[in-house]
Length: 465
Ligand SMILES: [Zn+2]
Image (cartoon, rainbow, N blue to C red; front, side, top):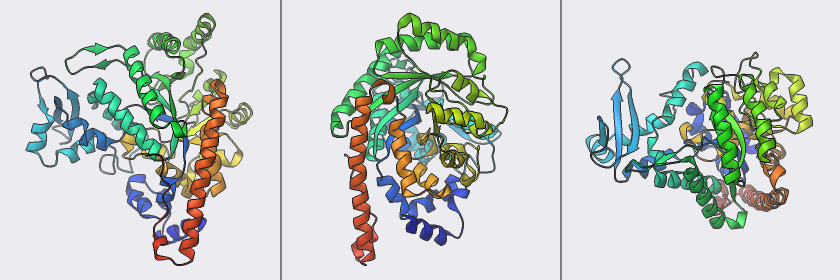
């Protein structure tokens, strides 16, 4: 693998991950390393969000072709940019301005590409010279265009498809951050959050049945908006405890998400965290924190302090943790893993050159960490291969280092608290998959060295189809 890395980097004449992902993505995909990382067993994904978990191509190629799918196209008179909002309505019930997707597609051969441009960030929509304060609001806008995912059948199908593609990419366990919101049928009938959790229970069971051979499982982290008032988050917390009692195996934790720097600090919600202690005692239910903190390049953003004070089980991002060496020590002592999302951090403007990502230092100093993809749907990719490849190249990792990150992804799941037996079983599955992958790689390399023409293609381990 090291030989492949040297050959790739020498052939490019520059350091690929020093550049913006969207610009070097074709180059990464053309390297012989890429299929290796795509086929590599990945263990778990511990930091990924609903509405951006799945494949945009499924939205465009499947969901927008369904009956009653409508689109609202609004062009900004100043910028000339057109926004595309997708939703389902019964004919005649659509609000003013909505057209059927079939009519819009018939009228414009470039419709699919334009919708893709509205649902994915790209070099065109998110140029590399933009900073976080511009990139993050543009990223947030995408979520508002996806009313189409409120329809229960589309909701189930989008996540089912997205999770199958993660499994095919070598993932065997996923912890998903979600707002647990209501759903709306095509006829306008609204279903409460408990219904949404029933959909997740069904989806979970269907995937567990289909992928029983790898012991696939998923759980949810109830995640609400840190931009909201303390009183709102207080109600969110009460709801999350209620859902946890109703779906005890499905929900594993609580978090606050959204653009961190302009949002409320974690300390701002201190009354809610005191309320959390009271709810834990009164209900007898454990709903630990998985705080999304330190997604900031500001040294005066001290949210990671409060996250650790509140006994967070992991830290989502922890990008600015390096400003606080004492907290790094605490994270090591208390085994609080940092969920590092390298490509997300670069795409959203927190770091331009991935060689300078602070996680390279975390890894070198032994801070517990896992790799994750955050919002791959909006970033235009599926799976974890890109993130592992980027980290491998940028941080000069060895195969042994990559293996430790893959193992960490399972080691720091909620399973360590709630089901150690399932964790041991999952680690056993991972070992078997890893051994098969290594054997496949070794055989291909040997064949390559022997000069066999067939060895020119890189091996692909078949994950469960
Ligand atoms: Zn996130």
